[in-house]
Image (cartoon, rainbow, N blue to C red; front, side, top):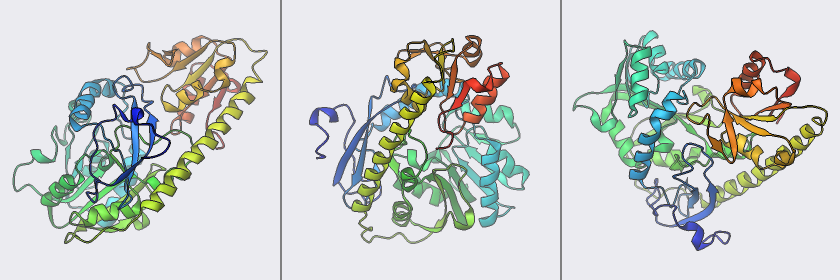
Length: 405
């Protein structure tokens, strides 16, 4: 038992599971983190970060039961779809398509698992591929069919295919880390691959977590496992795949924390996996220590901003009610003796209270003539600034939380 974790804090985390890679029952519960996702915090309060004492996989253990997670996805998918939170950018899709062309050029029949709104599939079709996309989300499939009616989009998962249907390449992007049963997932993919076929995918690289210049926590309730290059190689080898490339000639994932992997079917390995427990433990220690330093840096930045507001009227707006915005909620910003609001483009949370602050639409936030707007995002802070400028907010009153980090 980790010395910092009391037995009472373990309650409500779910049930213990075997390691998703090597099947070991030996694990260390390293830390419990708060769930700061505004869409799910009412249902899931805390998330367990654990590591396998044998192969070193970092994973969620105890883990939220699959039935509860499935029900949660079903409950939220309409809200998330309505808020356009599951849209893949065209630039991301083009980058992924360029990598696919290097390892399996057209003509080829490809399957995308978790096709979202169909952006990648559509570009692949235009490039000469025969494409099929599957997604368990009804709203996602409806949106893809509406945007790209010529695509073959199916609202199912891997077990929904008819016998005999096969593909030259199977792709999935930021899906594998959500999978409860990676052995079954990889087995089903292998059954669907033609001779000479490849699997190409992207996942978060847990080793990057110690280097990223932002403080939000990447250990979320949705991610059952967090793979490094070593543990993803082990997972592939134990399930009948061999990694052809990890990044390298595939290029870098458009996500700063992602890695690209291409793999081919190969005889499954039954040997003992590398013992990476100590390396993984050091990685977690480094990540959480770095996060604490970044939080202190954010606090210093907030104090600097507040010192410039003394002669300005109007509230402070935190643009982004997700985890980055809620980090600001815990700083000295709340002692500024002026009104503070969240604003967000997510229609599912507009009008609600989050951590005691009202969530406004961007237009309503701009209408308040705020003294300061803080763009609290890693990926979208430039878009937030442009949006508020379009609503007439002076540029000198808008700042970026992570500018220069």
